[in-house]
Length: 107
Image 1 (cartoon, rainbow, N blue to C red):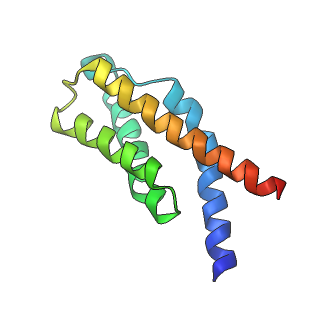
Image 2 (cartoon, helix red, strand yellow):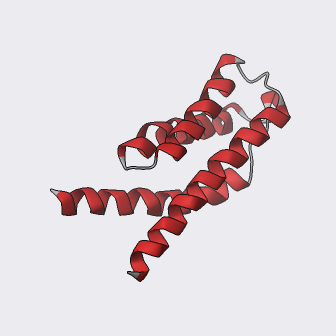
Image 3 (cartoon, rainbow, N blue to C red):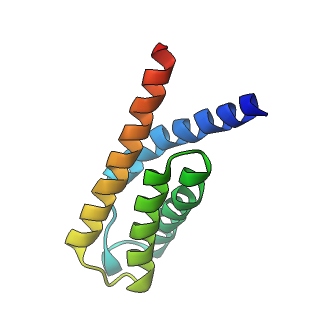
Protein backbone atom coordinates (compact mmCIF):
# COMPACT_ATOMS: atom_id res chain seq x y z
CA UNK A 1 0.00 0.00 0.00
CA UNK A 2 2.81 2.38 0.90
CA UNK A 3 4.51 1.68 -2.45
CA UNK A 4 1.33 2.51 -4.35
CA UNK A 5 0.91 5.77 -2.44
CA UNK A 6 4.53 6.72 -3.16
CA UNK A 7 4.00 5.94 -6.84
CA UNK A 8 0.89 8.14 -6.94
CA UNK A 9 2.75 10.87 -5.09
CA UNK A 10 5.55 10.75 -7.68
CA UNK A 11 3.03 10.97 -10.52
CA UNK A 12 1.45 13.99 -8.85
CA UNK A 13 4.86 15.65 -8.69
CA UNK A 14 5.49 14.84 -12.35
CA UNK A 15 2.20 16.52 -13.23
CA UNK A 16 3.24 19.51 -11.13
CA UNK A 17 6.40 19.77 -13.21
CA UNK A 18 4.34 19.58 -16.38
CA UNK A 19 1.85 22.17 -15.15
CA UNK A 20 4.40 24.71 -13.94
CA UNK A 21 4.97 26.23 -17.39
CA UNK A 22 1.21 26.65 -17.77
CA UNK A 23 1.03 28.49 -14.47
CA UNK A 24 4.15 30.55 -15.19
CA UNK A 25 2.64 31.64 -18.50
CA UNK A 26 0.05 33.31 -16.36
CA UNK A 27 -3.60 33.84 -16.79
CA UNK A 28 -5.36 36.60 -18.65
CA UNK A 29 -7.71 38.16 -16.19
CA UNK A 30 -11.32 38.88 -16.98
CA UNK A 31 -12.70 39.35 -20.45
CA UNK A 32 -9.29 39.34 -22.15
CA UNK A 33 -8.99 35.55 -21.83
CA UNK A 34 -11.11 33.24 -23.96
CA UNK A 35 -13.77 31.43 -21.93
CA UNK A 36 -12.20 28.04 -22.68
CA UNK A 37 -8.83 29.23 -21.41
CA UNK A 38 -10.40 30.53 -18.20
CA UNK A 39 -12.21 27.22 -17.65
CA UNK A 40 -9.03 25.19 -18.28
CA UNK A 41 -7.08 27.35 -15.85
CA UNK A 42 -9.76 27.00 -13.16
CA UNK A 43 -9.85 23.21 -13.65
CA UNK A 44 -6.09 23.04 -13.17
CA UNK A 45 -6.24 25.18 -10.01
CA UNK A 46 -9.15 23.11 -8.68
CA UNK A 47 -7.27 19.88 -9.34
CA UNK A 48 -4.21 21.15 -7.48
CA UNK A 49 -6.38 22.31 -4.58
CA UNK A 50 -7.88 18.85 -4.21
CA UNK A 51 -4.87 16.67 -4.83
CA UNK A 52 -2.05 18.63 -3.16
CA UNK A 53 -3.04 17.80 0.38
CA UNK A 54 -4.02 14.25 -0.50
CA UNK A 55 -0.47 13.53 -1.64
CA UNK A 56 1.22 15.26 1.29
CA UNK A 57 1.67 18.77 -0.09
CA UNK A 58 -0.71 20.96 1.90
CA UNK A 59 1.08 24.15 0.82
CA UNK A 60 0.11 23.43 -2.80
CA UNK A 61 -3.45 22.65 -1.81
CA UNK A 62 -3.82 25.75 0.37
CA UNK A 63 -2.31 28.10 -2.21
CA UNK A 64 -4.50 26.66 -4.97
CA UNK A 65 -7.66 26.85 -2.81
CA UNK A 66 -6.99 30.49 -2.01
CA UNK A 67 -6.44 31.33 -5.69
CA UNK A 68 -9.50 29.34 -6.75
CA UNK A 69 -11.66 31.12 -4.19
CA UNK A 70 -10.55 34.56 -5.36
CA UNK A 71 -11.12 33.69 -9.02
CA UNK A 72 -14.56 32.17 -8.43
CA UNK A 73 -15.92 34.72 -5.97
CA UNK A 74 -15.33 37.61 -8.30
CA UNK A 75 -16.51 35.95 -11.51
CA UNK A 76 -13.44 37.02 -13.46
CA UNK A 77 -13.53 40.59 -12.17
CA UNK A 78 -10.47 40.19 -9.97
CA UNK A 79 -7.64 42.36 -8.82
CA UNK A 80 -4.84 41.40 -11.21
CA UNK A 81 -2.12 42.10 -8.64
CA UNK A 82 -3.82 39.88 -6.07
CA UNK A 83 -4.17 37.03 -8.56
CA UNK A 84 -0.51 37.39 -9.57
CA UNK A 85 0.57 37.29 -5.92
CA UNK A 86 -1.53 34.19 -5.23
CA UNK A 87 -0.31 32.53 -8.43
CA UNK A 88 3.29 33.26 -7.46
CA UNK A 89 2.62 31.60 -4.08
CA UNK A 90 1.21 28.51 -5.78
CA UNK A 91 4.21 28.30 -8.12
CA UNK A 92 6.58 28.64 -5.16
CA UNK A 93 4.78 25.81 -3.29
CA UNK A 94 5.03 23.60 -6.36
CA UNK A 95 8.73 24.40 -6.79
CA UNK A 96 9.33 23.52 -3.13
CA UNK A 97 7.56 20.18 -3.61
CA UNK A 98 9.61 19.44 -6.71
CA UNK A 99 12.82 20.22 -4.82
CA UNK A 100 11.71 17.78 -2.13
CA UNK A 101 11.32 15.09 -4.79
CA UNK A 102 14.85 15.77 -6.03
CA UNK A 103 16.21 15.58 -2.47
CA UNK A 104 14.49 12.24 -1.93
CA UNK A 105 16.01 10.93 -5.15
CA UNK A 106 19.51 11.75 -3.84
CA UNK A 107 19.11 9.58 -0.73
